[in-house]
Length: 486
Image 1 (cartoon, rainbow, N blue to C red):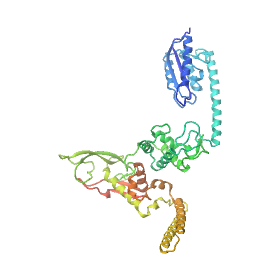
Image 2 (image 1 turned 180 degrees about the horizontal axis):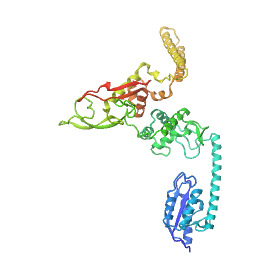
Image 3 (image 1 turned 30 degrees about the vertical axis):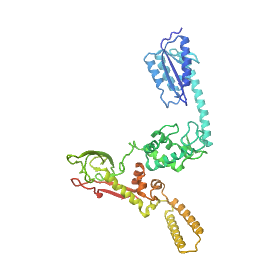
Image 4 (image 1 turned 135 degrees about the vertical axis):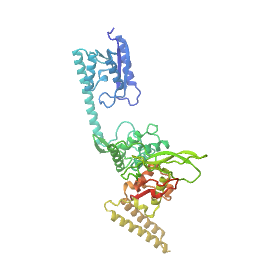
């Protein structure tokens, strides 16, 4: 029989990819059998599954509970499968041994000796065995790092869990998944909204690699992952991979730059829910302060939609109904309050009109790009040749149709090449599907809020002034100033 009366079993396994708990179960069974054989009453069981004791990157909650029990003198012996299951970190081992010494706690290992940490010899043996454990871990870590670096240098895909869009081995793109990744990247560099992408995926019923609905963290992980650009980061350096890229490298780098900007800034705040929130400027402050959204009560009547005076509300009459009315307010001083609906409608009409103009295609062009003037001249000349070719064909009854089509095709290909070199990458992503739409209004109405906000922010600076005047009055467009950016 043993003199121990307050036994505690501690089990831990560093990695359990399937989270079955089989490893810690075996440890618990072996430790329980040892306790039974030694006649030690087990007062508590503590388990940390799939948690390394070496890196210190993840907390071991049950280890902390065990140490609290030790400090409360509720334990006189800790039973483990091996000493390495308890400590493999030098700092933690030193602190733990000192705590065990002060409270008279011993260690009993299924595979190892009994360690009385109240004695110098027991602490010496525990320290020596712990150093052997640390040596084995560090040596294994060195081997793993060398192997990983070799894989990185050879351009092999990362091991571990499957990435959404790729097969489990990482070499093959899944055509049913990768288009969602591309769409997410293209949307993010335009809207900068992770929550908007997550919302869209969930609304469309698109599930992640585990068959679960997407979360913001899951989307953010995909957008930050260099694997999708056929890149792999090792010790702060990017290495090219040999597997197929899911997205162009410049698109991935654009997304990474946005995240880096957010990391340098303060909290990005909640997702925007209205067209001008955080974009429109307060005309009263005139110092760059933006407007935010709010609401106020409004009397609903049969007459036409009108704005209320600033901060006022008509007296309710019999038969009138009250409803909540969305508003824009000055973000800082709250001295500006405007009905949201007519302001949004006015701004949207401006956008639709701007995108419907004959010169709307020029919005794609990057005037600051090298050779922009030469490219513009080439495009003008090619368009003129296309126009002249069409006129000549119309006037020549004996013209060969196939020759005309071939000449037109080659001219259009050259024009497309020139225009692609003229294109501003960010504008092209924001305005894609709008400038060249047959029905700009229908295309605009089909966009989500994040994309609409990006278009407004690209095209114009919007300043919202006070409504002015008194009494119920029609919306005055002069109180919303729109200054074109491009």
